[in-house]
Length: 156
Image 1 (cartoon, helix red, strand yellow):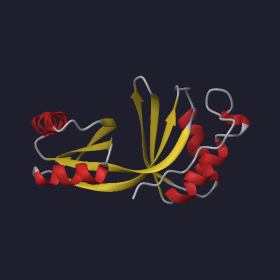
Image 2 (cartoon, rainbow, N blue to C red; image 1 turned 180 degrees about the vertical axis):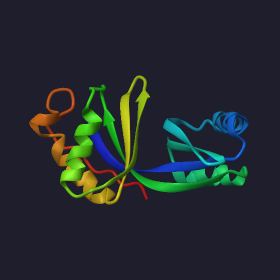
Image 3 (cartoon, helix red, strand yellow; image 1 turned 30 degrees about the vertical axis):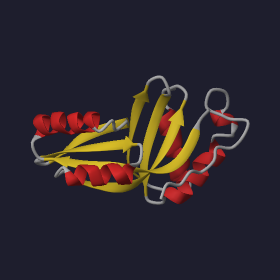
């Protein structure tokens, strides 16, 4: 079943590239921290890891205590049972038709759970409502639809 919810993403800044990434993931492993999905990009002289984790506020404090620079950012997570080409564009189109701009997005494969699409938008609260309503329509029927609406989960 497809679900849409608000959550937090950790933006972790690493100044020492590959060594910092190795050390970060070693720390996460040692602490038994489950990383549900992540992506990365270079921001001039720093590598930025965007991670969705269980209990993000606690993990932020663990990372900061270990000397990492990180911040929590509000995001929307769409969990999909499988991937279909063009599905992310469809979600983007729905949001744009509702006047919601996408600031960034990424897709992650979460075996065996399926796929996860992460969106950061100009209005996450409204985006959750728009997407929850849409996943019950014929556009998202079959493997993406649901006979009952997804619930909005807000972690605070």
